[in-house]
Length: 401
Picture (cartoon, rainbow, N blue to C red):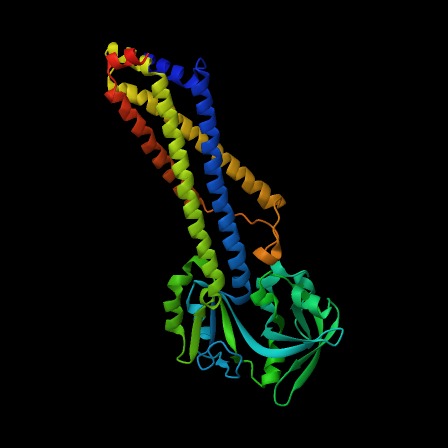
């Protein structure tokens, strides 16, 4: 065993052959860079998906309940909050909160008398806690009574800012005008929300429609864990009344969520390519070492060393090189994660990517699966050139030299 370790150490640390040493170093760097690129890509993808989906979920909840007669339109067919999901939601532990809302079409007059069509979403003050991360105003300074929150995009179009008085027109019969104060400005970077939605007091919406406190256009349902969205629909359906229409937020914003799913496929393709390159690199290293040490292998065989022992020598060299590269790649990846998470070093164009910096998040399970998959493929690639050792004969090694 002592002789085995001595021979192995000689194979790993030998510097007499500059070419094989250079190949080992180049392969180490290539494998490390490739693996770190895959892991960092998964961090970015996870962060990007979470950043985009969280924006949508914070504004719309994970499920939207509305009047079945209306689907998701703005018609005046209210839900009865004394029955169905709103009352029964307390029986489901998966639900963290339920927020009634009333949607209304409206026209907003800007400073220069320009008119902007908007969707007025009437909500309670508790709803603001969900969208706080996207507001430029402290939660303590916000109260929806006689005020509204507009988007940065609408603020830009209308030249309206916090503290300005604004006239909002509801095209009812008869038409209704209200003067409100802008108490906050939000920004998500999502056109689907920023281009049209203003947030106001649900009691104002009820006065406009002449509804009582037990009526609303719909409900935003917030779950404790967004991973349970797919399995939760049936539970929500079971507690709903016959006139309640239930839709997941994923379905409402299907284009965005389908686009996020497409990103997964791109990363998988990238992952397969990198694994192939890493496996080819380690295969090349072992093959070069075997060719370089052909006479050495012949000498070992002439002394009666079993092929299995020689296999193990070269396997340990390849395995150590692979493990070192994977550990180094994970170190680089985690370092990138910490720097980007805390300092946001790399920026993005918000108009194209919905966010102004590269978001990062770690999915521990996915990262472990990637590392295990890479290691498994590399181990298989180590075995392929080692088979060549078994076919080497002592006379061949002498001729080779």
